[in-house]
Image (tube, rainbow, N blue to C red; front, side, top):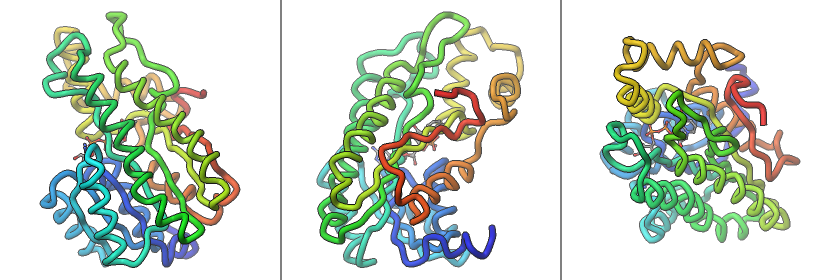
Amino acid sequence: MSETSAEQLKGKVAFVTGGARGIGLGIATVLAERGATVAICDLAQSACDAAVSDLGTEGYTVLGTAADVTDRDSLEGAVSNVITALGQIDILVANAGVWASEGYQDRPEYNDADWDLTHSVNVRGVVHSAEAVIPHMKERGSGKIVNIASHGGRKPRGTATGRTLGLPYSVSKAGVIQWTHGLAIELAPFNINVNAVCPGELWTNMIEGIYANRQNLTDGGSGGSVREEYDESMQNTVPLGRGQTPRDIGNAVAFLSSDDASEITGQALNVNGGARMN
Ligand SMILES: NC(=O)c1ccc[n+]([C@@H]2O[C@H](COP(=O)([O-])OP(=O)(O)OC[C@H]3O[C@@H](n4cnc5c(N)ncnc54)[C@H](O)[C@@H]3O)[C@@H](O)[C@H]2O)c1
């Protein structure tokens, strides 16, 4: 990290949903390294506290506040806690997301529960998150909103069996991209930038479940571990030859949250090693 990047977000306060693990924790870490004070929001207070304790040990200023993004009231409560404690929110990272409903690893098809859950967390949760901070950002006359979509929201991925296992997820992430475009238009007069980052595939709890599902449906796949299948797939399908890391996503979010990106709004940026190019 250069000295300049340590100053990139100095004085800013960022609110990161789903920030206790995986990509969200990676984003929170990079934003903190770049000088932001970070509020981590996740389902369980204990998970928020653990993340805060880890980042605090590194010397960063962090706060944890639990909320369920599907529940507008609990989210508004978390935002209010952060504004009371830290005085402001400059950056919203709407990252909380789910792949499918319980037990999907063992199922050959998506079901109604998958449609309902992906819509309520991935779409409505992202909408609630923005709505909870917009009045505050409008009052301050500035803000940056970064939604975490997916390159799957641009084009669903098929499988050897012809099934598109994550179709409800892909549809929900397409919704996040459209929400990003529309909200950017609505908030432009208020000096609030709205963008999305579309990750490719990262080794997190979510992707482990997805590869376990694929393996279960192909009688163990190539015979390797789930992790080996993932690594092999990344080497074979990603032009840059690897899966991304949470830090890769955090770097893109930091840029879009910074003054360097003040003329960028309504965009969805793939961070996927070139795996899909539109
Ligand atoms: N891992 C990937 O390959 C990948 C690829 C593209 C996009 N994404 C997206 O990145 C984001 C993070 O994914 P991840 O891989 O870190 O997943 P993850 O499952 O490891 O982490 C998701 C986090 O969101 C939290 N969360 C889930 N539902 C919530 C709710 N209702 N309210 C508040 N928090 C909630 C979870 O508790 C968890 O901490 C998601 O939006 C996901 O769709 C992931």
